[in-house]
Length: 381
Image (cartoon, rainbow, N blue to C red; front, side, top):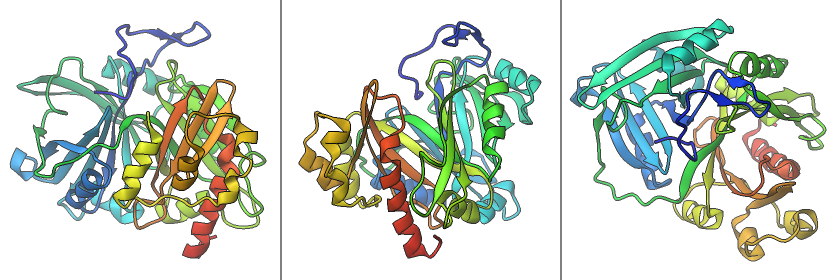
């Protein structure tokens, strides 16, 4: 399974400019969180989000130092990992950052080549290529560092038929879970320290062969009080997109400043999950207790004037507090959760694309004002 919308059979893909893509990616393989209590986190994602438990590694499978739960919905895979060792890197990561994303894993045809090509271009290696085997075949993996303490792990699984990876066993929960219509990872957003955005954009361009897709400056993303800057990079086929944010000077502390204060370094700010029916998805998530940011009804006063006609019922859109924006290709609908951890760090975006390829620039002001209201309640604005 992968977040790619269709399989890729050629090892070499071409960028739009015709040059060979030295790092062809099939999509996001999985997103791994290091968590204080993975078992309870897995329960939350099953009950509230409708993910299904599909694999497990822990004491019962011969793993003595950690437990990991693999959850899946559509082509989205989340891995939740807890350490048993108080002095392990996993425990130290949770102590410093709280529950947070450690690995953004990328599905590739050739993990060794992906590692060698990126390291040759300047990537800092974390773990060299290795092959893991069990009765279902073999998986090759290798990892490099990116912003903060986040890793990219290249996963080559073309010779594997198991539930997830060797070392994991298929698992099924006694819980009856009902999916909410989430299909794929649309994009993952990283927050970095002031002055580091361009450095990491350059990393993705030069080390991983990504292209700069779009730039937002502090005039695009600002309110009366706060601002940030963002650049979006994308791989050759567009299956993997990483917006990178950094704070910008404002009258008060921005959401990026707040994140960095509590996460204690750069890291993954939010994960955007694609649905084909945002009204159904958000209705169900709200029923199950997922908290979303609030946007005042005045946002909808000039909605049609701004975005034109949409297929969805405006009253349902207003009732669910969904945001709408349009670009040259079509329109999109989106909504953002409040942070899903106790620290105001990681959150999710639910997004439906009706042709639009952009990221909701027309909603930035309303979104940021909503976040500022939350920051004010937390005393961190």
